[in-house]
Amino acid sequence: MRLIERVAELGAWADGLRAQGRRIALVPTMGALHEGHLSLVRVGLARAHCVAASIFVNPTQFGAGEDYAIYPRDLAGDAELLRRAGCDVVFAPPVSEIYPEGWSTWVEVEGGLGTGLCGRARPGHFRGVTTVVARLFNAAKPHVAVFGEKDYQQVAVIRRMTRDLLWDIEIVSAPTVREADGLAMSSRNQNLSALEREQARALNAALAEARALLRSGERSGPRLIEAARRRIEEASLARIDYVELVDPDTLEPLEKVESRAVLALAVHFSRARLIDNALLEIH
Ligand code: PAF
Image (cartoon, helix red, strand yellow):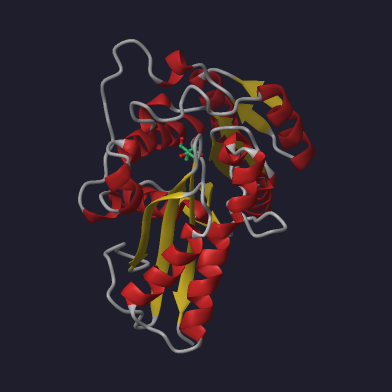
């Protein structure tokens, strides 16, 4: 496995593979890797000849007062995990390589997809995500890029950007990987205290509660949301940012589950903001 820090070197690697007709998968990450990220690498390996994983804690997607400074970082540990997972390249650039002197171009998906849910709570967040992912796409020249479904809104925004910019890149989303008690794996789980970690199981429990209600015939958005909120509020250290029912494609709020909906939630603990979601379907 090769460790690359420079955009030009990554581009040369990609050009060489493309010249041989080989497919490249990119797995963009911010590091502090866990089984969820490794599952994305495996999806990449199944769909391409070579996989590059990027590790870059992207400053432009963090707002003032957010957790950029305390975001967990462990390049050596991450590189070892990626090597064992069969990754071909780790791209770990310094900030100056992604945002060099004079850099002044943002990429932003305007309108509905990025404005609700996390976009409302974190203004500018998705602009930072699309800008860095655009730069990573141009640097790594992938045929396929793999993202986790825990970040449902992020995947929707990146799909839109990829379509709008006519990039010939397949955007693949992979299922959320969970701990034994149902908590979605996230690098930010490392910033939970022992008691918060215990209480954080409430997020998945809230989604399970909504699913069970739906199975029992409940279709009302406000009632499904209320049940999920109540379950999270049982966790004394949790502070709800949002619990919303939205259309899976447009991410517009829904009053009712007609056939498919996404229940999405974000919850703060003292040093970590966690997100999760569930696709609710009527069969
Ligand atoms: O999901 C993440 O880890 C980040 O938002 C991403 C896609 C790597 C962009 O920085």
